[in-house]
Amino acid sequence: MPAHSETMTAASILREVAEFVDKEVIPLEPAFLAGGYSAVAEQLHTVRRSAQSQGLWAPFMPVEHGGMGLALRHFAPISAALGASPLGHYAMQCQAPDAGNMELLASHGDARQHQEYLGPLMRGETRGSFAMTEPEFAGSNPVHMATTASRDGDDYIINGHKWFTTGAHQSAFTIVMAITDVAAEKPHERASLLIVPDGTPGYEHVRRIAIMGEKGAGPFSHSELRFTDCRVPRANRIGAQGAGFRLAQERLGPGRIHHCMRWIGICERAFELMCRRAASRELSPGKMLSSRQTVQNWIAECRAEIDAARLLTLDAARRIDAEGARAARRQISQIKFHVAAVLQNVLDRAIQVHGAAGLCDDSLLAFWYRHERAARIYDGPDEVHKSVVARAALGDYA
Image (cartoon, rainbow, N blue to C red):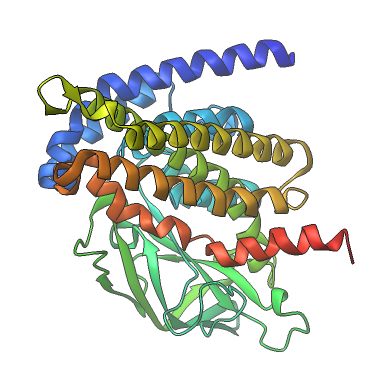
């Protein structure tokens, strides 16, 4: 398809997605904020079926697997449109960690894994999770872990402890990163990825971890897991033995575009709420909050920061499409810490403009402030990504 025609198609899809979010997703938010995921689970199921019937399903996935086949640079604006609501990504089967698991299985899974795990996941019949982080080791060093998977004939026996495994309490399977070759010369070649179906003996769901006072449910939960002599067949390994770290990094590259554009969608919604509040809140007769120069400065700064973050992220997406995630490593790290900081700034200013009303749990701002503080930690903390960018810059002067 010619580039111009492809761009027009992506633009029309974006308009359709934005309309879908406005009409079908955002109306669920009041009940969601008041009662949590369980209060909207049934309606959200209907909305997800509606997205499927309209052909608005897993837009980042190849057509042959049931997705819309959009390039990353065209999916990125859609991720921002979905990010305007905390329910948006789940409504169109774009939520983490399922999105990354679908990409991983599509690219590196075999025919049986496609049929047993990818197919039901793509159809929205199941959920999956991804277990890499361990409580005893720094998550900022993903090659430093203790979970092992030792070979026993045609099986692997997994022993270890994981946490912050998103959505695990309702997942049909978990993809586990485990050390399969402790003697490998290169640390990055010691781990493999193994599929552990729910109910496998030795697999224990310990708990859902409370995050700032909330355990979460549905797509918004994080679990602690234990594996004790948990046996899975060698056929459940994704890719080659020792390729776990490489495949995880390949999964995380596009995933950071997904996250950053979702954060930009949150920023746009928070910006809209902030502007509406400033323009409608009367401080004294005839004096609106928007008349204060400090508030005007916040609004101007937020607008510039959001626009700059969007352009940086779209540039990284184009680079990944053209050259692959490895070639775009600096750009990926750059957007990861920069957009996360913009997100925190915008949410903080929006809450300040709302005053006490911004702290109420019936406010989207309070929900996002609680859940999105993690943006500066997961998928690599700010400090690690800043080191990547700094080393790349300093390399020119070595």
